[in-house]
Amino acid sequence: MLDQPLNSLGLAKPPSETRVVVAMSGGVDSSVVAAVLKDEGYDVVGVTLQLYDHGAALAKKGACCAGRDIHDARRVAEAMGFPHYVLDYENTFREAVIEEFADAYLAGATPVPCIRCNERVKFKDLLATAKDLDADCMATGHYIQRKQGPAKAELHCAADAARDQSYFLFSTTQEQLDYLRFPLGHLASKAETRALAAQYGLPVADKPDSQDICFVPDGNYASVIEKLRPGAAEPGEIVDLEGRVLGVHRGVLHYTIGQRKGLGIGGLGEPLYVVRLDPEARRVVVGPKEALSTRMVPLREINWLGDVGFDSQPEWHVNVKVRSTRPPRPAVIRPISATEAVVELLNPEDGVSAGQACVFYAPEGGRILGGGWIWRGR
Image (cartoon, rainbow, N blue to C red; front, side, top):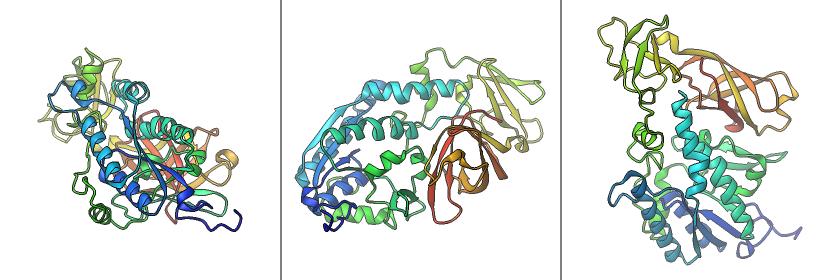
């Protein structure tokens, strides 16, 4: 085995003796991963998680997107000739992701459930299932790169910056990273992925990308939360930074930090933005744009992927993202413990909200060093 060359997944085994569990969502990305690995001769096993039944949850006839995605994944497996299993994870998903999403939103935070799903379901429970199936590794269709560094496996941004999913995968632990593979991370564009799907004749080659959170398919968070937490949309006051009442809102859950439109308090001169949510007092606090500016960001639940201990030095000079859609910006991290820190943004950012992630990047080279959860507003 010592003389055995590494295969394309970095394992010292022939592909035919290497079992790979592919997490298949039913979309084009994970389908291409499965097809490419099968074509390379790997022992591929496809697994799809049934996380959420849209039809039942939204009471819309024919809206069972979950069922359609499972069907699409099964069709790809049949076309490529590898086994496919469906695991019912609805209860796990509800408890680990949806319930927290609702509670966080009602507490005035802006949660990112896709990160929690990767952390608590896909890269925890599904990964454990892959090991139970005696798989040598698990592959996904995420656009991110795993590279072998001088010390250990490292997480790096995708080659295509427009598709990079590093913000949503910061909580991947080192143990998980050692087992995971991301075969699409090196591709230059999504067009290459679709070309591969067409090359293999996959039935999902032209399937559109999903845009919304899976259990909020129409983007209407408030309606989902009202179903989960009846009575949550209680009206209250819109106040300025001094507490003066400016108007009435229709429920805190309808508002997010940084929101300007739809406040219903026009004619007050300068534009006003939501700068804070106070669910206990049922208040939406508004102020001028400069009131959104934040420099100090407290974090907890930090996952660190650096080569030495996170709290082994007083500060780290890195780049950070405080929103998935923003580019990394220079910052200084000052650890409080192995899992807590305060991040100082060298250039203040607007709209930093509790419940969002703050992801750490090496100043050069695109390596992800981990990240943490923003847990207190301003």
